[in-house]
Structures are given as structure tokens and as C-alpha cells.
Image (tube, rainbow, N blue to C red):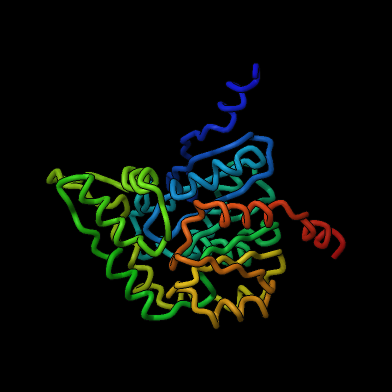
Length: 299
């Protein structure tokens, strides 16, 4: 038991900041600095704190980096939204983050936009540096109806007088995430809040992030890049998802890296990665050998 305090301290998350592509990114870091690195990248209007349960579960085996994308959480808002709120820039941020942390090779877990960023980075800025790729409920194409649904709640985040009201709104907006405990909903709320000049509170992101769909309308059409990927890819899907359609998920198992697919019941877009079946699937996948490094060495 003498080592228990040291072990607990080693696994406790640390809040850090790093300048990437001229912008300050905030990230949470879990685990030992010399452990194999895992980058966990969140969805469109979320923050890296969405991965708290998963990161805590894996921190004994990995060095885990959970950034807030530019314009979200505690990261800087872009002074040039039309140019920087898009996958190309997010992939550049990912490379700058990895380089700044001296991470040459990494595993990647990405939810929604974070999964799209991972696939795009794996095909471009981080090519041959991602050994295992977990994509949570997104594919190389998106249905228009799902985009419209996302724009409806993310494009004009409401303002409230109290944190309790914000939590009630989040519980409705993110109901498709599936089961979360009351404690998890409260943490999601408290890590998603910012105060407006008039004293009310709203969600902690720049509303201009949704301009991605206007300024870069084909940003999520990425089959050409997907078909070049060769690392093992685990595709997670909410069984009721309206963003990753069954036919797209099936095509992802037949093309490019030929993804291993798991559908989780009782959730839509996107599984919260906070319950045992979801965490265990990711744990088992990330633990598989890194064959691609040897393949690249001998190619």
C-alpha cells in the first residue's frame, strides 16, 4: 500500500496548455509520460472532458491526451473562423500537438468530428504515425438530415439563467449519447459552461464552429482519404445513429482499412464511451500489436 499515493498521483489528470499552429490549445493529460500515447479527440460542440471515464479506465496503461479543439472548452477561439474551423486545420493542429509533446507514434480515439479528424490526419498530416484508429460514430460521408439536426442545436446555443437549466437542455440535446449517470451529466454540464456578458450562461464553444458546413460544404466527404488508410480501424456505431448510416458503416468494413465494426444498442449519435462494453471494446483493440510499424519498415 506504500505506493498507493504515488500510483493515484500518476493516474490523476493534469490540465495543460500548448501553442499549436499559433493558437493555444488546452488539453487534459492522463497516465505516465513514458507510457504509449493515445490521443482522444472529441465531437463538434464538445470538449476533451467527454473522455474522462474512458481516460480514467485506460490511464494505467497509456499516456492519454484529450485536447479541446480550437473554439471549444478552454482552447483559444479562432480569429479566422472561416479558415480554421475545418478538418484540414484540425489535422494540422493534431500534428502540431503531437510534435509539441514529442509523440512520434500514437493511438487515436475520435468521437464524431474527432473521428473525422483522426481519419483525415491519418491520411495526411499524421500519415504513418497513427498505429490504431478508433472512430466513434462517423464515416467518410454524412447524411444531410443529420447535419441539419446538428446545426439546429449547435448553431444557436441557448442561454440560461442557471446551470441547472443548462443541464436540462444538455440532457435533451445529447440524449442519443445513451446512458449517463447523474454525476456524469452534471460533470458534462459543468465542463461545458461559459458565462455571457449579461450574466447568463451557455455552452462553452464558439457558435462560429458550425460555419464549417457553409464555408467547407464538402469537408466531410472523405472516401478518397479513407481508402488510403492501412492501420487497424475499429468503427463504433450507436445502433440508432442518424449520422453514421448502416450502409456507410458497412462500406467502411469493405473498403480501405476494412474496419472492424461494433454496434452498441440503446444509443444513437454518438456512444458516450462511458460504460463497460464500450470501454472494454476499445481497451482490447488498443492492446493489439502495432503491426503497421513493422510493415512500413519493410515496405
